Length: 466
Image (cartoon, rainbow, N blue to C red; front, side, top):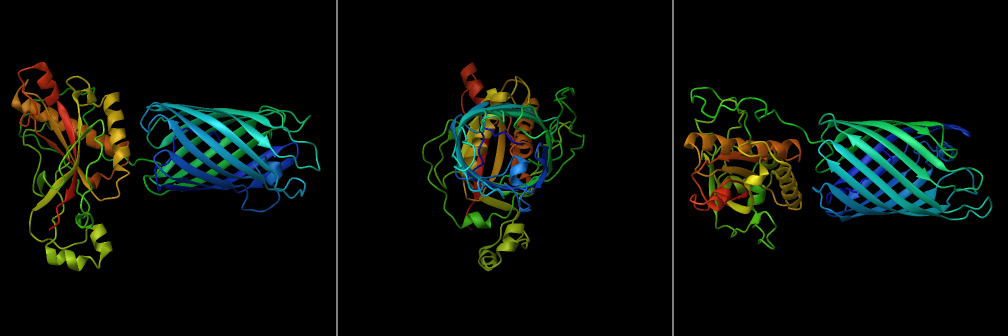
């Protein structure tokens, strides 16, 4: 609520917040309506600002939050998916008050922010220094040491529980130090709308006795809450019946890509420096044909909730030219069926995740696998080109062919589910496929070769220009 984390928004993402704030202290009760904005400038940079009161009721000074903020934050250590990150924060503040002696007085602060976040738990701490300008006509202002920390816990995907504390040394001699504790809750109403509520309590002399905070925030781009999809992974505590009869029905849900025509007009970029998990590909050399009638293998176990591969049918060339004047229809997929059941595409990028991405002989993602996926998604979010993903599972030749096909499919589904539920990718642009032991990249005669064959590949596909 009040304490920053070392994380930053992705480039181009923007968030707005509208708040109701009430505080009660020695100078009386104050009601204000602050507004906030945050803009991502790059993969590790963001700028933010806040205006203290849209009510313009002269309660800014009494509220204890009567400053216009303009800040800049840069993550200097740790990647987006790392457990530990450090950021530097620079902020300029200008007071807003009906008291002419205090109105327009500036202050500047710098902070070092550290964050540790793993699964549902997070710990954030900061420390810095605030330089206060002297108003000249009142008591001299001292510079201040500032510090704060916050704890967060996520009992569910939509809910966050927060506990925070902040401190600052004495600003005006005789008024005492500032200190406050805050308890809050954050609930994600939708992928791009979040509800905030908090209660603060003053624990040192210069802070209000109590304060309440209610707010709504909205984010463009990735959003703040990653909308879940129907569960398609078998729970770990259920018995895995890899040899389930083929006659058992599959419970399916379709995953379809958006219209590929927008991307078809642009040539793929040349692959530059190969990242840790990326396999180099030659642009327009590796082709894949998706069939909208393609489905999962009949031997897939019924315990796994699968999605059928049902891509949209590509338009003919005349239809493409006519559709260029109808961008809305292209974007929403409201196009006529050409009758051709296949979609030719080329592999624009490819990522190969090793067997360490999963627990031994299981399809549940390991911590290493989750971290790898987050790094891949961070790279893909920098791409402005339209694409969809196909996730291919592969195994070695140990075990029966049916078992290997089942395991490879479940691992592909597990990764697809994580990308949708935790990374916020569009489910309609993700396909999964299990190949079992049929496509080795090394010999199965040695342990090293078998280890290389136990993998999952993420293919970034761009439809081929018709």
